[in-house]
Length: 597
Image (cartoon, rainbow, N blue to C red; front, side, top):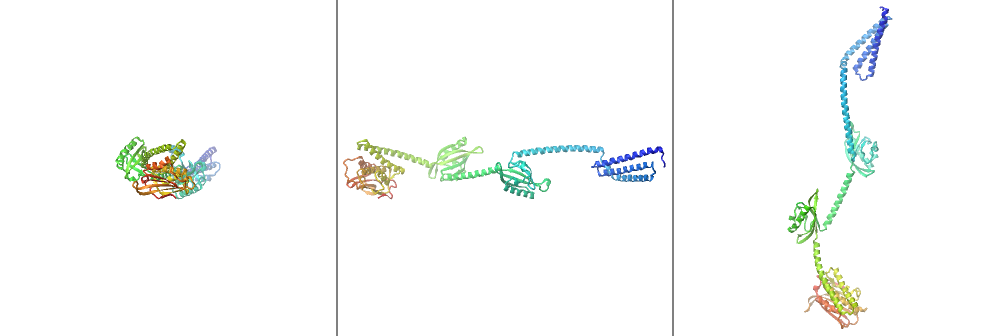
């Protein structure tokens, strides 16, 4: 078949244009498949089939153009057959995947889906932003809560390196703990203990709590309570531990202080109990109805059970209750303390108490009264005895003044000049004073005769030497007898020193005393007798003139104690005997022998 020359050129141009168009479409599809990785598998297969059909069609058109100049009709027929086969195969394949392709959304559907997706994405972003804001606020609250406390929170990996920490303990900074272990932070003992606990938590997957003691650079010794939980992200096996550390140093120190105070209080109470147990102090508490609720160291002869649960009307004698009840009620009303002296009959005796009443407060209100009662019975008795003693002292003082006045008057009558009066009167007052010293030492109960002899002779001789021979029954003279016997002994000793046995080197004095029976008409029953005998001195002659000393020995002293006196001027030495009733002796006036020979 021959083409007209005028048609060849247009036919060739048309064929080349079709081929170029098909090739351009194929290239576009190839570039599309290469640039769109998210195309579905069905779409990708369909696009590849179309690509093959386009390439086959372009090849068929090019062979058709070639037949315009060369008779390659056989090749053209083959290319047409190939194109037909490829097209048929593509149609068959497309038919199979046509449902999937038809199911693909349209442009409008894609736009609608995209709009819904954008809306959903906006909502999701809003929720994420809200949750992020809530998380930030929660974190701020968490950090604010921990920043003012002694609570620390941290996480550690399986190797127990710190990976995160907030509000670190021990005054450390977070960066000083990150990546480090307890061995770098705690004492050796505390670190070893914590390692054991944390490894146990990781292995067992169960939380545990413990307490440790370690050192703080600024505060010294501190205590930490540590709660260890397994860190299991996503529910997987433990990848480390989470720690909550509470600084309990203040709590422990308060506990130690409380223990110390409790112990000190127990010791104080023990000392208090010991002190009160041996004292005459009673303490007790009563409620607002004045029922006894507590009592310590009850009065001697009574027990706490005599009072507890009872009021004053039931526990005390009526007379005592009438005194104390108004006082206690006044304390409850005014909250002002009261004090009084009250008496109570215990057994057969009357006891006096100094009662102090104070308001007892409980929870800010007056719940009753607290009382302290001090047994002042002994003090009352002492005061009564003191009154008796003062009356007796007044009486004795008057008697003493009378004696002194008598001594002064009689001394003045027997001397001619003032120096002699002063000397003799002073010596006699000294004798009286020495007797009073003995009486004071014996609380004015009396004076022993041997002490009187030693005191009155001691100022003129050595009483421990062999010049004094004294002795007799141990006798206590009543104060009045002691004073008079002392004055008589003083006069005898003074005379012996000046004129008698003590005026020579070989002189001796014998003083004997005792209680004996007598049946004379003038003296019946028992009498006390004291004798004075001198020897070894100058020959004795009875003086012509009776002085005050002789008057005292013979008359004044015996008369004062209802006795008799005998003074003998023996040439070998003066002898003197004084006898008076035993009523002038104290109750223990008779006793064992005393004195010295």
